[in-house]
Structures are given as C-alpha cells and as structure tokens.
Amino acid sequence: MSETEPATEARRIAAEARDRARFEEEALALADQVYRVARRLVSSREEAEDLVQETYARAFRSWRSFTPGTNMRAWMLRILTNLNVDRGRRIQRSPQTQPLEESDYYLANKLASAAGEEALEQEQVVERMSQDSIVNALAEIQPQFREVVVLVDIGDFTYADAAQILDIPIGTVMSRLHRGRRALKQKLAEEALT
Amino acid sequence: MTRDPCDKCEEILQEFLDRTLTNEEWAEAESHLLGCDYCRRRYRFEETLRRYVKTSAAERMPPGLMEKLQELRGLDATA
Image 1 (cartoon, rainbow over the protein chains, first blue to last red):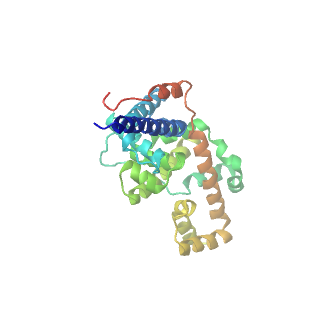
Image 2 (cartoon, each protein chain N blue to C red; image 1 turned 90 degrees about the horizontal axis):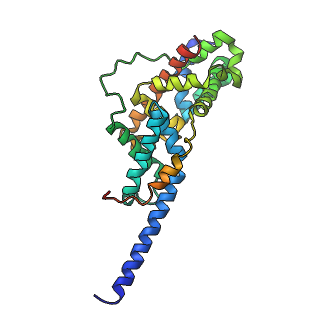
Image 3 (cartoon, each protein chain N blue to C red; image 1 turned 180 degrees about the vertical axis):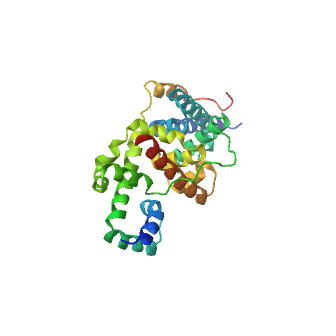
C-alpha cells in the first residue's frame, strides 16, 4: 500500500459524508411538502406521519440512488407512493364501477341555482363550502383518481412528474386527473350543498 | 347563446386552465369566452375553486414530526 492511499481514502470518506449531509438537508427541507401530499393520500394524521417517517427512512438509506440535479421532491414522492401501495393503504384496484362523473360545470351550475349566476363571479362563492367538506370530498374519491389530483392540484407536480412518480403514462395521468376533478366537484355538489 | 359552443367550452375547461390546449384550440376557446358570460363565469369559478381546494387541503406538519425525521439522519443502508 502506498503512503497516499489512506489520505485518498480519508478524503473520499469526507466527501461522501458531505454529500450525504447535503442530501439529507435538502430532503428535510421538503418535509412540509411531502407531508402535505401524504396527508391527503391516507385517512388519518397518524398514518400520514408514519408514512412520511418510513419515506424518510428509506430515502436516507438509499440516498446514493438519487441522482443529484434531478427532482428530489418527485423522487421522495415516488418512494412515498410505493410505500403507500406496499402497506396496502390503497384500496385494491378492482374493475372500476365508479359512477360516471357529472360534467365540469355541474358544481358551478348547482351553486348558480342556489345563489344566482352573479354569485359565481365572487371569490366568496367557494367559501360557502367548508374546508372540511373539501377534505371529505377529496377523501371519497377513488384512490387511483385521488392520488393524481393530490399530486397535481395539491402537490403542484406537473403531469410528467406525476407520471414518473406513479409509473404510469402521461395520458393516464391526464385522464385520471380529469375524472378525479369531476368526481371531486360532484361530491362537493352532493355534500356541501345539501 | 347557443348550447353547442358552451358544451365544447365545458369539455375543454380543464385543459384550458391547465394550459395544455393547442394554440388553435386556445384561440377558439378564448373567442367563445369573450362573448359568453355563462362560460366565462364558470371558468372563473373553476379557477377560484382550484385555489380554494389547494388551501383547504393543505395541512401543516404536526409538531414533533420534523424532529423525528431529523433523528433518521445517518441511517445505514444495511440497517
């Protein structure tokens, strides 16, 4: 062994420790956003906390498989959605019997007939629906539609990111997103306005 | 107001707001929206609704979770 090898090895170890610490810091800075998505994918706060902790445990263990410079938030969410499936939190994908959603103006039409056409122009019109009713309506959407709505509309992921996270084609992201949003509005119309 | 253009406008509401329409479809939708209060109100409503859903659904991390995540730092791949 030459004399320089231990020094090189020490430098390598130090560099790796730095990379790792940097990775962990970046990942932790995303915790709020990761939790926000997790919370809407599962039904309770406790489950969301568990899921986020498992996600970070796995991410920290496998930090070397993250490619620096790529989208870490999407990488974390991919771990999270996979864990969510593994733990069987998601209702099984059975042949869909979800009733056909109403069309896109359905909720607006309902509100307009309750409060008048002009009410639709006012920002407050949505506040007629409580925040709880929004959360409940989201929770009732079928899981494979909900996860796309949660990623795109709440997590601010692009279609491409959502496709990568869920490992499905972009076209499937779009159709699930559209159906999920329609289902959400239908549930809001049923729940919030009755 | 004829129903047909409004039906079409309703069909492309999500793509319009997601900005995934082609330029041609976008222009067609915009020219309809300019002249149609009915659709324009519904588009505006949809935008407001999306914002409201996002704020309503956002829940902050529970206190203490960050500390638990901090404790996971340095986990070994073999652990």
